[in-house]
Length: 320
Image (cartoon, rainbow, N blue to C red; front, side):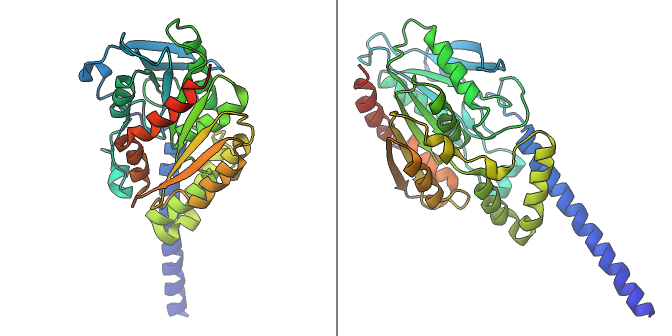
């Protein structure tokens, strides 16, 4: 009987430790979903010799947003064509530094969106870079919704560009990464101003959370992910399964959308992106690129800017 009581005490002790561990890990990840830590802006376009203007404007629902407008050179032959860059979670307008504790844990790599902006600007495009809500220097409107509410930010950016005389509103393209790709898909049914878009590794959040959790936490993820979702929902978030960019993509109208997805992405899913593309009336791709990590897919687009330039050269020149 004494042995049974000792075993029982150890059992409850271990269960308590496990419960505490699950709670701590779930709370940590939920905090990143609800109100992610903000990265500082570690550079400006001026560091690359580019002229730029600070931009402050409201999202469609009034959240204060910040960004940069980078005008094309006077010799530009693109006639007012403008590219908007939409970053991922939990990045900022410059991309991702990958210098925090989480990047050391999950192997995230730096993403340099300013490098892509520089190349596109040199090709003759105006560039608009901005921070989504809850990121960078923009206002707070927790929780993060992985594109659903962030679509209001992109719509606000388009309204800002409407007020610039040098921008041809018939020639606006958007490139979105990760959550930024989802943001494009949620925005497209609400506007006809986006004439072409590149969606780099969009994802359904439910599957992403499960795959990410399994990759980082192994079997423990089966306990952590549901608890994380519960905390997130209690903070005002939606069910993960309810955030399905494929539903929004079906309302993209006649806007051509080029999908890019890394083949070695352990957190995203080739079938998921294919399903999203299949729901998009004017989808191109998906273009499956070589990768061994999700971040390689982002980097592929930055390393091969001709993919983006050729697409926009064709689509935006046809927007007359």
